[in-house]
Image (cartoon, rainbow over all chains, first blue to last red; front, top):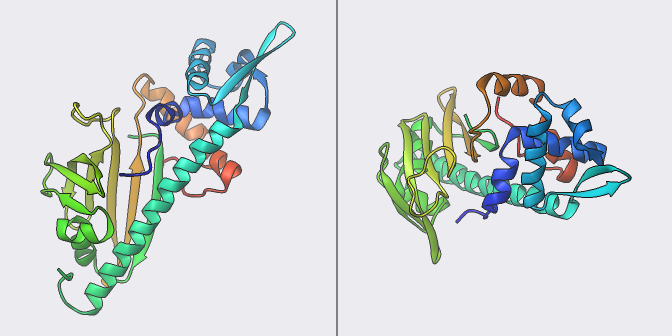
Length: 115
Length: 148
């Protein structure tokens, strides 16, 4: 089958608002939920829900700093997700290269695609 | 509209009709895609792709020769594939003159269900580059980007 992007992971990053949260965590390091809420066009509650989902799939972890809870990206897990996506892209590149070869051969021979 | 997408393309020195046949005919698909393809290329048709001793069901969505072909797969075995539980694979063939075709494939994932349209629009316009830039930074993968 295709490279299996683990379903939960895919669905966790398939949501653009969650990707936005992740992107902010990647570029800003450990930050609080309220800080995140100030950066995005959705509510603090939505941010919290997204953080829960991201934590569940292991993309994000939390740590306490004084009275604040800070969230940060789990680099290994993110790397794993990124690699899965890259593998999928590479797999399509190989398939498209094969289609190109087959189509160009068929066309050059001026015949129907070979059986 | 799906939200997470892999998009790849290739320029082929052949007319779209030739490319179409390679992409959609089960006899041809076994040369570049699956080991065995059970598929009727009609909208709504259920088929099966074999990859070695693995494989999975597919359901054809769009058949618009020689321009668009799409199917859904990777849905839970007992469920009908639909937006939200499956991946959509879509091929788009764009003629460039009479002898060349740009073949684009996209594979897109689960769609957003609980996000108001206005917010989606706003997000899209504000953060068009978000995911692509994010992944580029992490792994130098220019392949993955948001549609639109």
